[in-house]
Length: 351
Image 1 (cartoon, rainbow, N blue to C red):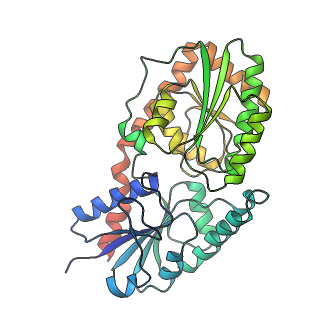
Image 2: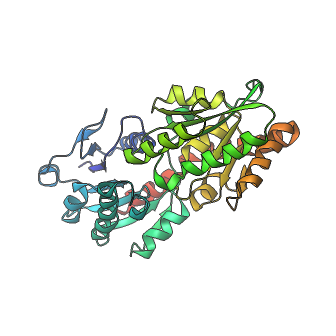
Image 3: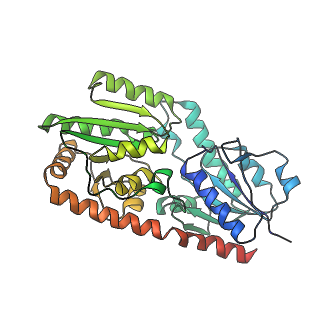
């Protein structure tokens, strides 16, 4: 009799990295002869909606639960008789949203609190980064391991390193791509760019690409900041279209991140593949993504950050050495993706 191992996602988007990873895991499971489906608390593209009577009707041998947001799937699985593999995509601390959106803050509080109910049923927990694994261990998930994302981001799937055709430097384009939530401190990206603008002899523009945001109030606040500073040179765009994001990266010169809370950072991977030097404030998720490559910033001294951007702009050899190391790192990471299935292979042997 064939094993049944399904995946359940919380609040997915059709083309986000979480959904793409679930699709690759589904393909791997089916290659192993396992019957598998992907379900979620709401329908999204190839992902079916999760019925409340799912466990009674389907009776899976195990479930891989991708936890990122508060979901009734957590309550459902807390009563399940099957084994659970918890795939943890870090939940941002609720305090980051207070002062912007109390509803989102409450959702994140519940997502962090309710996951504890899955401890007894969880066979193994797989976090994207070391910091997320430490977080799970601190709340009682003992068998926790780091498994970097299996999938490539939709941008990275099509990416070829761009080295021979950098955009012209008649205008220096600085870019940040992300979810644009309070923990990503996009306002600090703006501050650092303004310092660079004041010291640069060449016109510069800042592009802020919001892939998604669960906090509309934070985006509105950023728009007010832009309106009061340099609205003709700071461009805030909301899009999850991977082609548009890839084009924006290829048309830029430097990727700048001031985030203070990250899990695995796919936009940085895309930036490294596109040949952009990455300058990033060193929070734990950034360390896991970039390791020793790129330019790590350990304090938010904006004058010093401005000088770093200037050095990369004016010194082609320095810029080339940074991007070369980045490209080697990310190509090595992309090639090692298949090894991450090892955790699932061991799990299958134990069922």
